[in-house]
Image 1 (tube, helix red, strand yellow):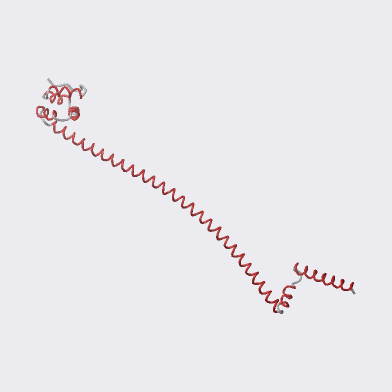
Image 2 (cartoon, helix red, strand yellow; image 1 turned 90 degrees about the vertical axis):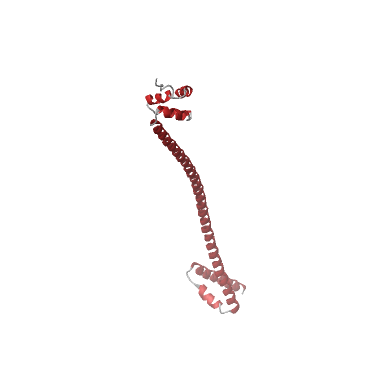
Length: 193
C-alpha cells in the first residue's frame, strides 16, 4: 500500500508539474478556469481581489514613478535651457551696457568737438569781420586799434593783409610795438617808408 501511495503521489506531482508547464508556456490556459473556480470560495475570492488590487496599484505606482521621472528629466532640461538663456541674456545685457557707454562717450566727444568747431567758426567769423573792418580803414585809423589788440590777433590781422597795406599800418604804429609785431610775423612784412 505504501508503494501505491508513493506512486500515486508521484503521478499527481507529475501531472501537476506537467499542467503547470503547459499553462506557463501558454499551451493551455488554466488560469482563467482555475480562477473562476477559486473565486467561488469566499475567503479565496477576497484574497484574489486584494492581490489583483495590489497588482494594479503596483502597476499604477510604477507608471506614476516613470511619469514622474520623465517629468523630472523634462524639468531639468527646461531648467538648463532657461539657465543658458539667462546667461546669454546677461552677456547680451553687458554687451549692450558696454556699447551704451561707448555711444555716450562718443556723443560727449562729438558734442565737445561740435562746441570747439562752433567756437572756432565764431572766432574765424570775428577775425574776418575785423580784417574787413580794418581793411576799410585808413592806416592812421587802423594803427591805434591794432595796437590795442592782443599780439597774436594783431599778427594774424596783419598777416592776412597785403604786405603793402600791412606796411602802411605798421608805419603809423608805435615803433616798439611795431618791432614786436614784426618779430611775431617772422619778418615777412616790412614797414613802408
